Image (cartoon, rainbow, N blue to C red):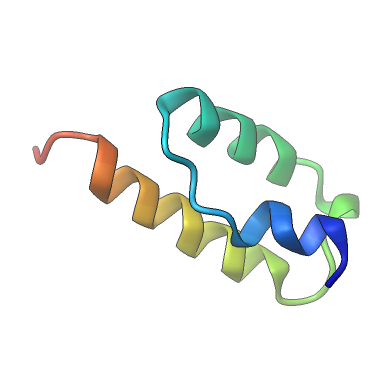
Length: 54
């Protein structure tokens, strides 16, 4: 497993982690094909766990 793959697969556990992953993913050259979907799933899971329901 490539280290960058671990970054997008790891679900953040803090608000700072959500921000860090979002900022990392904002540079498309860092991601391989399909990693954007994995990263978005990680962000979604973190948001569901950490942010209050609207």
